[in-house]
Amino acid sequence: MYVLIYGAKVMRIKQKAKKNHFFLSFSIFFAYFCANLSPIGMAYNVILFALQNLLRLDIMIWIAGIPLLVLACMWLYHQIHQRNELQKELSMLSKVQRHSVEYDLVLKVMKLAIYRIDVQAQTITFESDFRDVIGSFHFSPNTPLEDFYELMLPQSRVKIKKALMDLMEGRTDEAHEQFETRLPHSEQIHWEDAYATIEKRDLHGNPLMIVGTVTFIDNQKSVEQALIEARNQAEESDRLKSAFLTNMSHEIRTPLNAIVGFSDVLPMAQNDEERGELINLIKQNNAHLLRLFDDMANMSKLEAGDQAVRKQHFNLDQLLMDVVDKFANKSRETGIRIEIEPATDVVQPFSDRNRLREILNQYVDNALKFTDKGVVTIGYYVNNGLLRIWVRDTGKGIPDNHCNDHLFERFVKVDEFFPGSGLGLSICRSMALSIGGKVGVESKLNVGSLFWVEIPVE
Image (cartoon, rainbow, N blue to C red; front, top):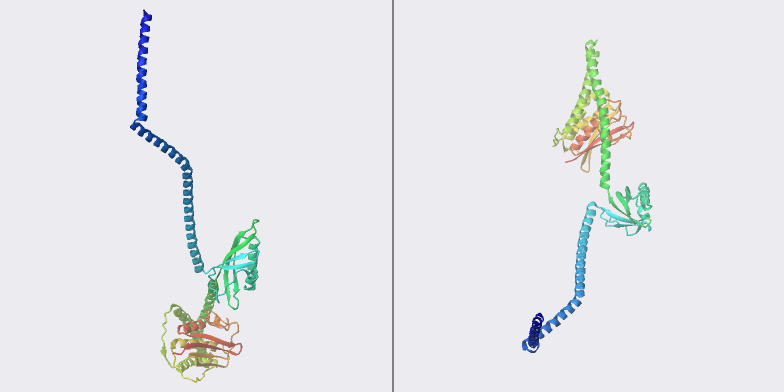
């Protein structure tokens, strides 16, 4: 019974399967008809075919375009890189141009010249020469070093040759020397300051090219020389000042001792003649002491500028007679005449009368001091608008090594055995300079001396 029931179910399933197969076949046919034979289907197929062709074309385009795109990217990167490099080069060029201007400006301000020495060719070439060269002289390119050496003074040539030889042979890396040179067709000597160093070497380290700078230092050398002279003068002044203090203590103490001593002896004088001699000795020492203090006071006033210059017209002949009258007593005591030499012209200068009188007083006083016998003469003359007043004596004279401007320095004494402060002639020069004049001396040993003061005639 179970077999019959199972068989009946199998038959029903087969029938259903046949029926379903029919519907499935019909569905497939209907779908094919709709998809291919109907207008909608045909349009759909056309669209699908076109899309397939476009897809295949896009794929081909992408396949072919990817290398082109890569090449385009590489070309674009290369262009951007080149643009950046060009910008860097332009920036560097701008900096070089700016630095070149600044470089030339520095050389021009410092008045430097750049030179290069070819070690193998032994030649020198000057570049960017901004030195103040008198006569506008310049070296031609590739000038032989020997021609360059010939312009130097002998004492400078030796040390410059040695310094450059040490550089060219590699014994030193740099050099600095100062030397004296004379430009062609000129007798003027100039000081130059030169630096040098090695610019290029070969594979073995031997120098091939030397570069350096050079400039004129005449002003610097003048300042250095002035400083040396000022230092020497200060040292000499200090030495003379010490000698002056020692000498002044002696000069002041000598008349003071004489005044004190003779004053003590004066009450013990036996007669009027002896008393008169003592009084004269006291007066002489008193005058000498007063002269010392006057010299120091005048020097102090001149240094402080307390004495104002008072210029006026005055009779020069009368001034000379006043000077002679001042030393009349001393002239009689020493037996030395004081004369005035007549002048061809009558002059009334416009100057400071008092200062001229002080100068002449000092000249006459010195003349009487250093003259044992003879005459002291005063005179004057006019030449080229300058009035020269002179005092001439027949004394012992002055040695040639002292007969110069140094004689008018402070504390200078030709003969240490003669009394005096060593300030008189220095005061004369200071007074002469204050009224626009100058002083001088002419002398022959054992013949006599002539001191003069020269002022403009206004």
